[in-house]
Length: 182
Image (cartoon, rainbow, N blue to C red; front, side, top):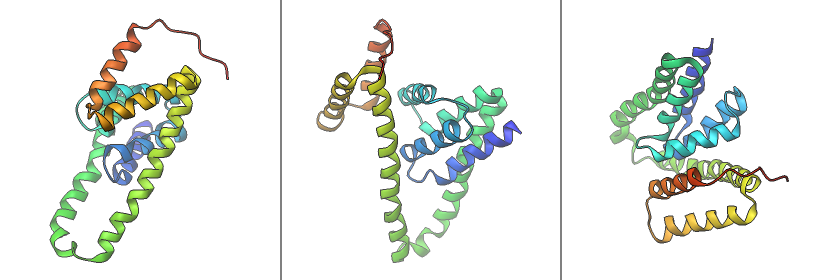
């Protein structure tokens, strides 16, 4: 039963993760934290942070790790396959028919209509991470890290992996503090 749940959870991510990794992250969160409760928010955040420091698609990295954690190597293979099979099938079908339908207005409308939904999903996940960071760090460090990351990413064009790597090194060298009370 566990393998079926793993497959179904990540198959849904593979089907509905329109737009790639960023749109898949909230879907993975919904399945593994909210629905199946395989992880809590802290564990999910840790997996996401570590996964972002590694090369490759985030959805498959997270699927592999979570599948492994839930059911060993078979779980990892199961989760990764469930994540990529919908994309493989869709790519083959879409590329075969793309030339025939690419000029239809409803195809362009459908694509444009999905973009705001993905944006809202990412905004909700971002807010959840900010609230968690505020709880762990306090508002001032949270806002400083957020603003600093925005400046480094958007205005100085520093690669996200470099920022994540530097922050991981800083975090590993810091002494742990007691969690703040709300």
